[in-house]
Image 1 (cartoon, helix red, strand yellow):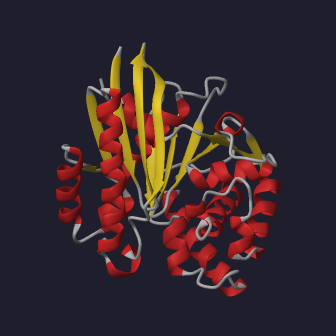
Image 2 (image 1 turned 135 degrees about the vertical axis):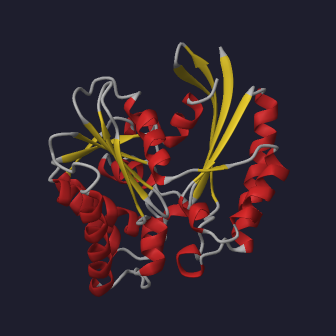
Length: 304
C-alpha cells in the first residue's frame, strides 16, 4: 500500500486527493476542493492576476498541512488551462514550490485528457465498448475517446465555464445574443475537435467535473450535494436542455439558492451548461453519464 497525494489546479478550482493505492485502486483518505478562480481574467489579459495567485497560495498552504498530517509518501501537482495560457506562469511555479515543496507540472491538453480518462473510465466498470469522456473545466474542455485497452484519441478545446462567461455572458441573466455568441464559439471548437476525436453516439458519453455533476444533482432533484448519488447517474439530453435553459434564465440569487450549487460556481454554471448542452447536441448523445472521478483520480493513480 502506498499513500499518495494528487492536486489538480484548474482555472476555477484547486482540488486535493490523498488516497491509498491498494491493488491498483484508490481508497480515499481526504478529498478537498477550493474555488480560487486562478484563471480570473486570463482570457483577456494573458496573465494570472495577483489576487488569484493569493487565493491559490492560501489554498495550497492548507493542502500542504493536510498532506503532512495524512503522511502521503508521493505528491504530484498538475496545473492546466489557465496556467498554460499565462505569460507569468513562472510566478505561479515559484509560489507552488514555496508553499508545497514540489514543482507543479503545467501539462498539455492531451496529457490532461488522458489523466481525465484514466480517472473516470477506471471507476465505471459496468460500461463496455468505446467511451467518450468530456472534462468541462474553467478554461478548457478535454475530449478523449478510448475503451478497455484501446487507444486514446484526445483533443483540448479552449472553451470552459469561466472562459465562456468572461468572454460572452456579461449580463445576469445573459441576453439571447450573448448565448448565441457562446454557442457559435462552442460549435467552432467542436468542429475543430472532430479532426482528432470521433464525436458520435456510438460511444458512451461520460461527463466529469463540477458543471456536469452539478447538472446531474439538479436533475436528480437532490436536497444537498451527494457524490454517491451523482456518480454514475445518467442525465438525458432532454434534461440537459431543460436545466441549461432554466439556469440561463435565472438571476444570480436564484442560482445561488439552489441547494446543490457550490458558491464558486454560481456565476459560471450557465457557461458550463452551454458547453455540455452543445456537446450533447453535436454528438447526438441521448444522455450523459456523470462521474465524480476525473483528472484528480488520474493524477493519484499515476503515483506510487
